[in-house]
Length: 178
Image (cartoon, rainbow, N blue to C red; front, side, top):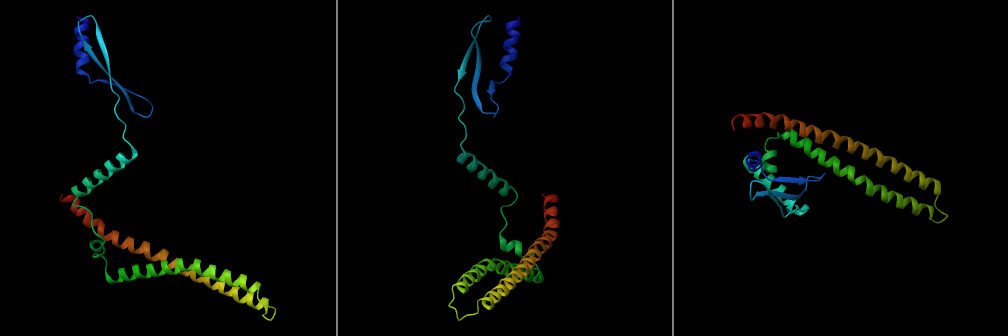
């Protein structure tokens, strides 16, 4: 009676899975009963582990399926269609600020080259006047880069904040009517 009760309990439970610390399947044991008195344990093949490439491919498929569920990805022009003319102007100012901010490094490299050249200049050139002139250019580039970085740092977050104020009600409305 005990063996038949155990048989009913064990057959109702799925096969046991032995796992290590990383939760990787190592082996599966299946119990088969020949008689009421003895049980035969059979080891099955370990499951194949998913490679990094297969995992990334699977995650990409899942992400595409999720996007399709919500109507697909939205294009950049469709996102920008919600921006007003003044907001687009601020975006353009941010792009210009970013370009000027990025231009600072090459200009500093040129000025450093000029500084090196002034040290090897012939004796007829006033060395200290030339170095002072280059130092003033260094300072002007630094002030210009700081100003451009400030413009960039103000314009981009402001633009995103304004668009988010427009996106949130639309998203909330879409979720409610889904």
